[in-house]
Image (cartoon, rainbow, N blue to C red; front, side, top):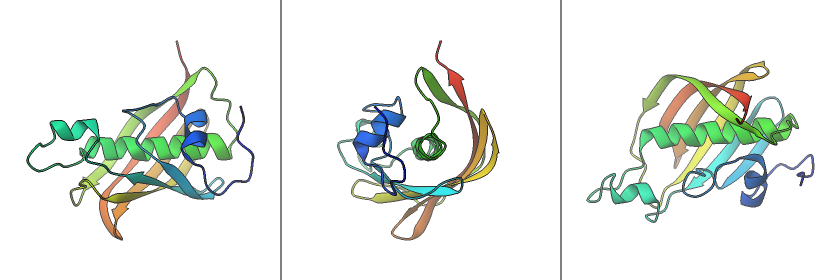
Length: 153
C-alpha cells in the first residue's frame, strides 16, 4: 500500500507503512511540517507505559538518550522514504554513524518531544542528517548522523 503524495502530516498508520519498527521500538507517533528534500518534524508522546521506564529509572523515569537518537533516525528515515518515494520493501535503514550527540535536559513521562530532522547531505544510498529534539521549546537533545538504505538479508 502506498501513501498518497503531497501529505504534510503522516499519522501512525502511514509511519508503519514506511518503517519496519513496531512496538516497543517504534519511537515516533506522527510526522508533521514535511518539506521534501529539506526537513520534517516528528512528534513523540512520552508515556509512563514505555517499557524502558521500568528500569531507567524506576524512582525517577528518564527516557534514555540513545532512544532519542533512535527517534531522530526514525523521523529521518520516514521523511526521506516518503518524500523521495523510496522503495523500502525488503529494505532497512541502518545507522552508519552518530556525531556531536548532546543531551541537554532529561525527557520524562508526559513530555511531548518535537524532533526536527534536516537533510545535510544526500548521496543515495547514504544520507546525513541533523536532528534536534525539543520539549516546550527547549532543546533536550541534538546530533548529526548518517544512515543508509540496505537490503534485508
